[in-house]
Image (cartoon, rainbow, N blue to C red; front, side):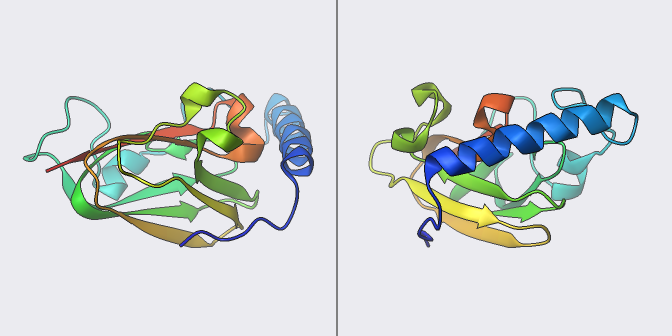
Length: 162
């Protein structure tokens, strides 16, 4: 499931900052969304995942899809999944993204969280149009991030319930 990294974290972070700067410039010119602003997409509705309210066995899904796009956001940013369920990340843009839940790789340790007994993961890079799935078998809260865009707010969370 874990794919080895082909470049250093420093290189990845520098590329992420450069890409984020370009995205901000394009947004300022009116050619793209401004990172940190609400998107006009309704990905939560199309993915079938819960983005508000509490995550319970009644509201949890067996499978959810999270979009990672050029707006430097995971959408929806929060999902509710049943134990043994699968989350799939799909890169809907052109900018490459990692999907990482490992505090050793986080710029801010609290951006990564794993329930007791769960193993960290790092899938890097996820190029435009690509997807990656992960089955989660340990109940609890998972907080994950995109390494190159973590400091720009590309964070997500998964609540897994029995």
